[in-house]
Image (cartoon, rainbow, N blue to C red; front, side, top):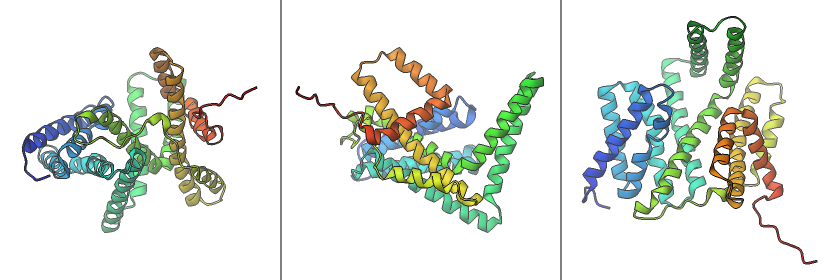
Length: 314
């Protein structure tokens, strides 16, 4: 596709405005802004698939320049690392026919690789231990959250219980934040791809996105889970932490497979919408439900729950 072409400037303008609106909502409204933040890459992805990678690159560049001028360079860096790379790489891999799962995996891997390289360069050049800085940031956030609840009137045993819970959560987050970063990028890419699939009829070419109900991890992935589990028993802090992060990421992959099984049966049994909503609410509110769904994904390797059962002739 030649650049510029008919309608190209308008696509760039619309994509840039939509992206800026979503990302500014994300940084301006704590907690509530998480939802628009998740879909901040969507406009660029759509117009990249619709009009070409040069249009997507122009959108990312314009948004970055505006953020640098209106807000600050730190926010620009946050946008580029959190949204910009996925905005351009995911459509590129999709256009090459990699399929939804592989496109997400490649885009997330590329994003994490860029972050690691930049973090290493920054840490070495500035003489800063970034891991220690992240841990301090987690501790600061927990202290601020506890102080906020204390100012709102929480006292006595309830305050102590909150402090203990936040402290335990902080310890866990400090150990698995690399895995949480990978999972969060995977969630962002996945949600944006789901929306793209719904509007794919407007694109010049169909998206190579299959039915999520059929999603299945490679069978060899279970050995990664087993190896990571045994590696956590090694009496070495670094090895145990690395194994824990690998285990979290792989269990998330099996959680996705478990959700595919659940949605398969929701569809097959025509489960009412309100029952599905209750299930999703419980899934968010009860961590044990998440573990159960991940276990369902693992057992699907042997159970093949979505394979039609053949009746025997008696």
